[in-house]
Image (cartoon, helix red, strand yellow):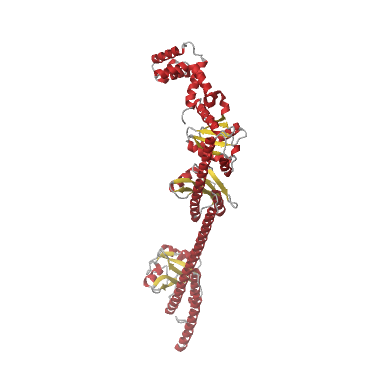
Length: 602
C-alpha cells in the first residue's frame, strides 16, 4: 500500500487521514511536553546537553542528532551527540559563518539540505567534511538555539540517506529547540549559581582563615604584652614566639652575637650560625622591615631589626620549615617592639646598677684602709660581702676606652659578686679571690674574648681593706708592663716584682737613691743647662751602642750625637767609647724612663 508524505495511506479518506494526523500530532506534542518537563529537572550543563540530543533523537527519529554551541573563540563546536559512530565527531569545530550551522546562526531560522556533501548552497569546511565522510552524514536539518534574543548554538538532526525534511518535522524540532534553549539557559544559570556559590564558600573560608589568623595574632600580642607586665625577660618573649609560631627563635645583640635561643617544643628548627645571619641582619636593619629568605635545605628564615628610634638594639631571627604567613611576619615585627622596650628597660636597670656599683667602689677606694658600717650595709644590700673583697684588678686596652672596659667589667662583677667602676680614669674591679693568679687570668681571658683585642689586666691583693694601695700598685704596674712591651696579659703585680721599686710608692726612696747614684750628675746637668743628655744616652744604649742607628732615631747628625755623648761622659766621668757594659748606668737610665711612664697621669 502506498504512503503519502505525511505517513497516511493513499487509499484512506481525507477524514481518516486528518484523524490519524491529529492523533500523531497529539502524541508528538505530549512527547514534546514530557521531554521539555524532564529537561527542566536537570541542572549540570553537560548533563542537560546530552539529555537534549537524546530526547531530540527519540522525538525526531533520525539516524543521529548532535548539538553545537558558539564558544568564546567564536567557533561552533560540537558538545553532545546521540547515534553517532565515530568518537572523533565531538571534536568538530568550525567557524560560525560556514556550513549549515553558519546559515542557521546567520538567519536565526531552520535550514536543511538533502545531501550535505553535494550541497552547493553552503560554504564547506574541509575538517568538518572529513567528519561527514567518516560519519556517513547525508541529509541534515539544523534549528537555532536562542537564549534571551541571542543565538548561542544549533540543534541538528541527521540521516545517513538522502531525504527531505517536512514542515511538521522542522516545526517539531524547532519547538523542541525552544524548550531546550530554556533548559540550556537554566543550566547556564545553575552553573553560574554553583560557581558563585563555590566562590562564596572559598571567600567565606578565606575570611574564616583570616579571622582565625587575626585572632591568633591578637592572642600572641596580648600574651607578649602580658610578659612585659609580669616583668618577663627577652628570653620569655623568645620562648613565647617559638611556642606560638613554631620553629626556633634567636635574639641577637648589636654585635650579632646570640643573646637568647629558644626552640618550639613541637617543631624545633635548625638555626644558622651567627656568621650566616650577618647579611640578613644587615638587610633588616637597612630596610626597617622583616626580611625572609629560604635556605638550600628548605628552612625559611625571617629576620627583623630591633630599634628604638635611631638606636639599633639588635635583631630577632625566626627559623622554621615551610612558607611564612604574612600575619606571622607582622607578629615577629611587633615582637621586636616589645623586645625593644624590654632591652631599654634592662639597660636602664643595668646602668643604674652599674652607677651604684661604681659609686660604692669609689667610696671604698677613698675610704680605705678600712670600711665603715654604712659602706658595709650598702654593699650587703647588693648581696655583696665587702669583707670578702680582697682583690683589686685594673684593666687597660689600647683600642677601648675605660668606659667600655668598665661596662664589660660590670658583667664579670655581677657574676662574681664584686664591684666595678671607673676610678681615677682606670677601669677597676674589686672582687673575692681564693687564687689571685687564676682569677686574673680568667678575667683577662673573658675580656680578651669579648673585646677581640689585646688587653692588660693587673691584680693586687688588698690587705686590711686597703683597696686604694692595691689600686695604685696595679695601675702603676700596668703602665710598666705596657712600657716593657707586655700588651696582652693577665697577671698579678707579684710577677713583676723586679720592677717593684717603680710602681710601689712605699719604695720610692730606694728608687730615688739608686737613680741618683747611677745618673744623678747627668740629671742635674740637664736641669741646669736645659739639655737632654739623659734621653740621648738612653737612646744610645737602647740601640745597642750603634751610633748611626741612634742618630737616625734622634734625627741628629752623627757629629752632633758624638759631641753629646762626649759631654755626657765628661759629666759622669766615664769613657762611653770603651765602657758600654756599665750595667748600673744602663739600669739607672731604664728605671728613670719607666718611673716617668708609671707616674704619668692616666
